[in-house]
Image 1 (cartoon, rainbow, N blue to C red):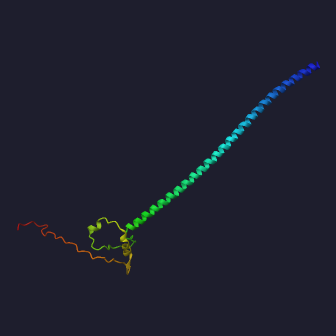
Image 2: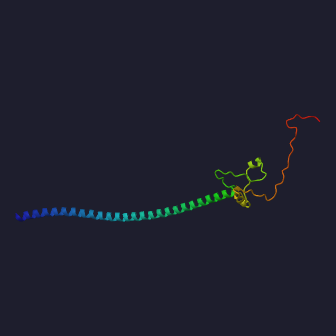
Image 3: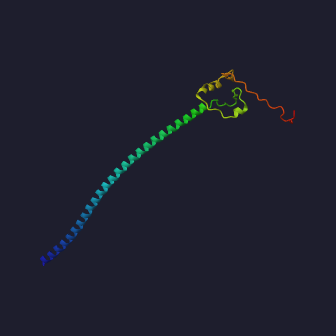
Length: 169
């Protein structure tokens, strides 16, 4: 009886060991799969990290190029503004009037009709004219002397019968 009892106990113990071995084998298999998944995830995480760093470098390069382009465009715009200012200064020969002072017209023989016409474009030869307008004599603006005396304008005689009735002579 003792041997039968011992054999039965040994059989039960063997069944428990078998089930425990199966459970442990299953746990080991799951642990192995988990380790493999962690390794794959680690590789994937490293790959994603590498891709993110590369993308960040590219974005920095693009931002730097954009900033250089912006600076170039700003410099070009400032240069064009300066050119416009210089052209405006060249074309505008009369100095800007100061408050409280009036500038008299120094052009000889200009009728009111002629002064209403658009001025001719200024050429480079008129550069000294601005300097003459800015000179003063005893606190008054100096009048430039004409280089050539102006020719007298032809006088057109108006008919004397304006406003009168015509007569038959």
